[in-house]
Image: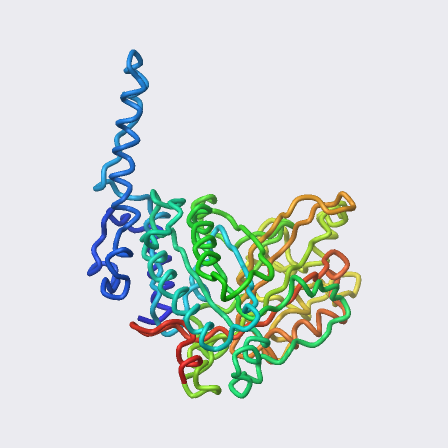
Amino acid sequence: MSETKKAAQAKSAQTATPAKAGTSAEKTGRDPAATGPALDISRRRLLGTVGGVGAAGLALGAVGGAGVYAAVETPDDTSPLTSVGATEVMFHGKHQAGISTPLQSTGHLIAFDLAPGAGRKEAAALMRRWSQTAKALMAGEVTGGGDTGVALDAGPSSLTLTFGFGHSFFDRTGLADRRPAQLDPLPDFSSDQLDPQRSNGDLWVQIGADDALVAFHALRAIQHDAGTAAKARWQMNGFNRTPGATKKPMTARNLMGQIDGTGNPKVADADFEQRIFVPDSGQPAWMAGGSYAVVRRIRMLLDTWEKLPRAEQEQVIGRRKADGAPLTGGTETSAMQLDKFGPDGKPVIPANAHARIAAPEQNGGAAMLRRAFSYHDGVAADGSPDAGLIFVCWQADPLRGFVPVQRKLDRGDALSAFVRHESSGLFAVPGGPRPGEYVGQRLLES
């Protein structure tokens, strides 16, 4: 099944009848032989056992307080999960999950460096472990004897794990001759204030879920699986709106309060696949069905931004804050009238407005799929909020997607005065694994 169909399935499941606990392998499309007996234990089935023990304990402790016990429902392994918890994204497919999958409410991004002395053999073993873990967790199952139990009472919750390789990975594994040209380091941008310790990395993992505990559980499993083969280089934690938090589905807002992602390519677009994914005939062959992820930690200078009157904020962005519509009128999805002038003779959408400069028609058609998370890491040394955007964008070729747009933004974007690019990374994300494969197998075993 294609990633496009899976994304549509995952999205439609938000409003469909929730899956019952203990869904069979036949219904979910899982392969029990690939997971093994230990992995074929559903968190949803375990809930019945765990809940039963909890209820018994409460009954024993509630002697003389029967009213307390009566207020608690005994869990039942036939009770349906909520629609959010029941939604499952398939691990196998043409593309990896977490790219065109609907945006989740919680995200963790983590980069690893291979340990000294670790090479291709160790990397292959690690990718095999990570893939086995990802397949189990995305199906709502525990990971075996070492499972932490954090998510025992939750369903899959739209969990996705996405894996990529950095530029340095190919030198470390003796595969430099198979490194894609598209993975050449990004150019320097004048607005960059990058921390090298929070940039790049040999391996990269993106985790997304609609439940924070499910996402954290997956993060810990990935860290445990790394063992002595790789060490975490950096980690970023993000969030978005929870499904169902608004009266109707909406494009996400960022921490500046702006609707963010209006101009994204849509899965239904005729040219979506060619813009976002490497074609089957692309080079190198092991990247067929894959994509390239640019990751940027962009701090928002919120104290300064929030002092601007709304009208001035809208001039910086080029869109209305209330509904995301362009300043030239209409709705969020209305085309920007870039040649429309006001009574003062100036463009209604200013020449340096972010939306104008980033528009595909202003960049030779350059497009990327933005799939970001907001972050808030407390207070910086100067007392300002350490908060902003974990920017992740996907494209078939970053030299034709991200780079030309960022170069233009770098030269005159009005938003630049209110943001700071603090870390950066570029990763080759191979296509989805076929049944029986692990992620990256076509590279590591070719």
